[in-house]
Structure formats: C-alpha cells, structure tokens
Length: 92
Image (tube, rainbow, N blue to C red):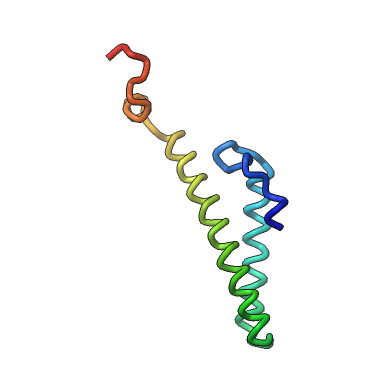
C-alpha cells in the first residue's frame, strides 16, 4: 500500500488523492482497532495488525499536521504572513 502513496502529493498541496489516502488509512486503522478489540486473533496476527496500525496512525497524524498548517496559513493575518516570509521582498 505504501507504493501507492506518491510522495509529491500532500495535504499541503490540496491534492484530493492525499485527502482520499488519509480517509482510506483512517478506515483501515478503524478496522484494525476493531479486530484487536475483539481479541479473536493469534498473537502473531495481532502483532502484525498493531505494527500496521502504528504505521497508519503516523500517516494520519502527518496528514492532520499538514492540514493544520494549511489552515493556519489561511487564517494568518497579513502582518503574520509578512513576518513568516521574513520580509523577503527587500523593502524593509
């Protein structure tokens, strides 16, 4: 599944596929949690699911962090945007 995730597509880019990938990862993570909570699996399968769950959780957290940065940038005042840009236009 990792090979399906193009590195250039992120939430920052507003790429619909990045958002779709987040939703798929979250759905898979929810399924893993449900299986682990049932407790019907072997220890080996539980460990595999746990490892996959950790990977998916990190993937989802990264997507959420990127989305938060994007929202913060959209909500930033013009003064904050200038400060973040470091007044790189050379006027000050």
